[in-house]
Length: 71
Image (tube, rainbow, N blue to C red; front, side, top):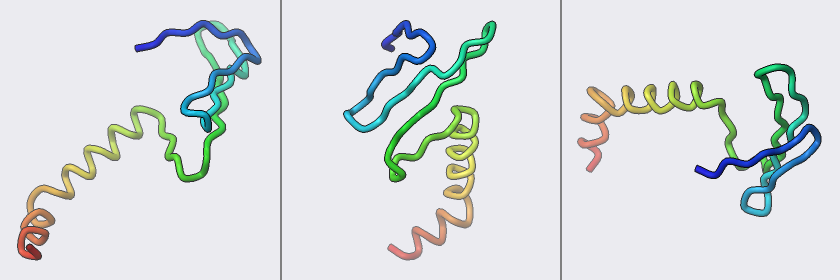
């Protein structure tokens, strides 16, 4: 993991097309802004985990059997 220090208004760039900017800092909370192409999905981690779990559940049971039947 890369750990960086940023002040309010400062940013970092990922992969030449994603920019993360520190918008505000209040106590132990940091507000960030993310600029990225529309083709790049951005989720809060807890939402991402829920999506992954739902996908796993969908692939088990009947969905997996139906997919296996196709091949």
